[in-house]
Each structure stands twice: as C-alpha cells, then as structure tokens.
Image (cartoon, rainbow, N blue to C red; front, side):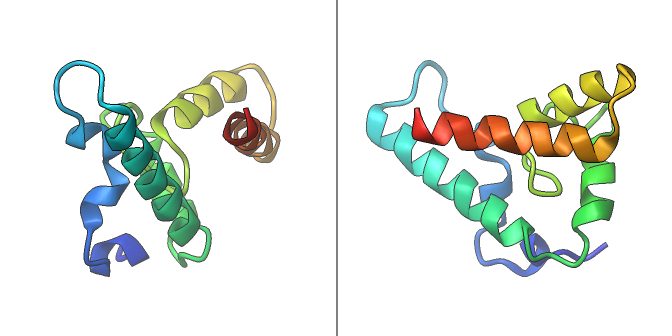
Length: 106
C-alpha cells in the first residue's frame, strides 16, 4: 500500500502524538500539531488507498496511534465501538467526521 503520506516530505504529520513532548504542550505547539493533523487528514481525503489505510488503522496494534484513512486515533476507537453496536461502518464514519467538525468550531 503506497498512499500519499508515503511520498509526502513530512510523513510524521500522520503521527502527531509521537511529536508531543512529555507534559502538556504549549499553546503554540498545540496549534501547530492541530494544523499538521488537519493538513494530513485533508491529504487523506484524496488518497487512492484511503479505504485500505483505514482498515490497517483499525488493527489493534494501530488503532491508538496516528492518522489512518483520514481518521484520528480517537475517531477510529469510536468507530470500533460503534461498529460493534450494529451501526454500519458508513454511519459510524459519518458520525466520527461530524464529531471532528463540531470540535473544530467549538
């Protein structure tokens, strides 16, 4: 699987939590991390391997780390929980993306 992140000059954008220092990041660092994460997610939207990437990101060893298939770790965890409740994958993805949109305006 070769996605757009594989050839991007800054592949670390897809793992924002790995860039955090111990403790709470400064406001400026937090804003940079959010900007990078949103940039990575926007790149994912046009990636031809997005579906396969999301499947890979749902694996237990990946679910808590990075951005996979355009979804943050917390969104994938939510997707896994919602999927077990009988909700379709498409409904869960729409819900998770709605949560992200709501958080960005808060």
